[in-house]
Length: 254
Image (cartoon, rainbow, N blue to C red; front, side, top):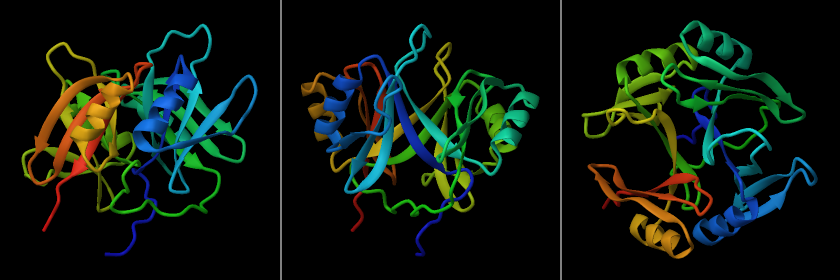
């Protein structure tokens, strides 16, 4: 199979906003083997995590005075951020942050779908970037899930705003979003009265071992274990500052 290339609709960056950057740094370094480097020292310090010489995530402190939960965000690649903002508003979503340039990095916005799930579209300033590794190495992000009270409506919304295609999960029972011919996320119904949100996952050698290690490091186990037929094993944990992340162990094929 040819190496994948960056395609609009793929998730290209993950970022944690937290109240305790130092504690989160220690936790993820121990859990996933990430190394951290300050990219913007000073009042607006931004931290970059790397694994195996490749940048995998960013982290920053929450803006003071702005109430928001500690959470991971998954940036989705688009050809035109401003057009995605317009389509979001036209389709009933909300614009939380208008399209903004990050010098020498790219252009992004922060949007919310009609049910409240937040997602930032992103267009890089440069096309010079190595393609995502397939399969994703342990310690790197590998998948997203949209949890929504209206899966059918969400499929229509994201098709218009981002341009996602759709397909079926390997079991044939669920719906996935696609970017070209690459599956990038699945769509799950929310619990009655539950929130709508995007979840992200990190590939690991053993979901159960990583789950238990997270607990020893001061995190919380939110979902101990889910076996996904023909896919693998999933656990969900929260770091000591409150950010939740999934752990994905791919099914081992003979």
